[in-house]
Image: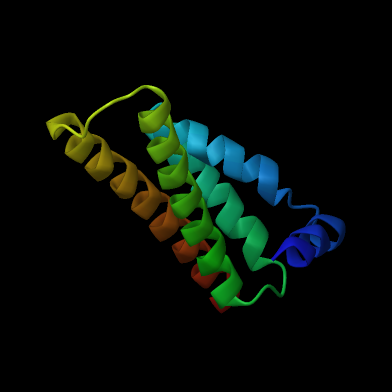
Length: 114
């Protein structure tokens, strides 16, 4: 995946690392409008390049997994015990990632159809 990320940056001028950082920030801070805007922008940009759909899906899944690993480490460092708040955060994070993914992929598919 590392080589593919470099290739996408070089060929398509899409910075997946910085885009992922922004996406995670929008999710954690519950910035719904920015999340939707980012999904639209990314979906359109990705649709213009011959990037396999499987890679696009893997990118979103990698962000989700990385985000949950971060939250797990954050929990350990802060000596937190899983509480009801955890389940609320889990629902919020997964819903935000799913919203991004849905808008992102719909723009890819709609742009490719045209």
